Length: 425
Ligand SMILES: *Cc1c(COP(=O)(O)O)cnc(C)c1O
Image (cartoon, rainbow, N blue to C red; front, side, top):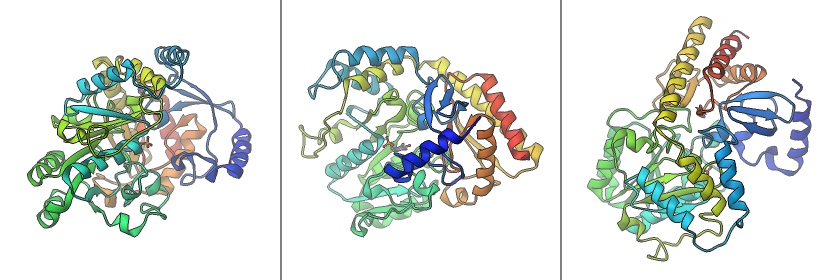
């Protein structure tokens, strides 16, 4: 397979788009080589402009839980488009979307549709601040919540990969409104609330971190967040943009049996279109305009094509999908662990359902500090080895890979074989 096409496209892209990409995580800066330019995708496969076929473990960074170009979703999109692509006026589709989200996430008593995960977290925090009349926001090191100024403080995902967790261009004044704590550290959380509890508007977190690689919450961590917030009158916000409909239909809050005050959704919930949502307790959501004084708006919010795609996807997420994803995930994990042992390479595979990371460190990885110990050079070599063998894995040590219901055992076994070979390169 020739990489000349990707190289030529990348050179052209770099002249007109910063870094040649419209989102930094798509760059191959931390693993070397040129990004694969995509021509089309179908099921579990990506087809590069270079003519190569890849088994895709990125899935557009999460949304593609049923695989690419699912016929029912494509049909929903085409028939919606024929009825007009945007109205800027309400539709019944949006009610059905809100009702569906609320049915899956009972902690969300009211919900607002927006166009990206970034918008969802930004709006949720504005609502939380408006509701509490407090300013301070607490987040955890290595968690990524989109690119709003006050959330680019010790951020994960591309910011971590590129070594810029605290972005330039964020006023110091704004960053001061955000306090960061180590993930999974309950004593640190309690100590902060003991000293500044009256100033804290909200605590936001990824209930399973995907954006520093997969890091599950320790037993009791999520419970502590919900209860500490309740005790001090702060708003607990589960950012389930990645975990929502991924680790279970009802997200991590369903698995943990918890009801956070607010929830942010995106990625899967948008059916592969630019659609996200935030919501929570009625008393908080009633502060949002036009009901209340917290302003938030969007020309394309609740777009009819996006909502149609989302509804077609959400109605197909049944128990069988999650059983299959769990089985494939377990198979991939066991195979990767075998490949590490056979090659005598230090590493650990962390997984929750169909979210997977192979960290090149002994592990377990529980927070930003332990994730940072990973050997990113080793990861880069492994990533190149996978890519050469037709396996498209996230081009960063600090990202989650995703399985879809379109993957087969044969796809997973091919990835395991590629890993075995790549670790011996
Ligand atoms: C992807 C992600 C976001 C940002 O969503 P965008 O649609 O990229 O703006 C926010 N929070 C989490 C947990 C995410 O994984």
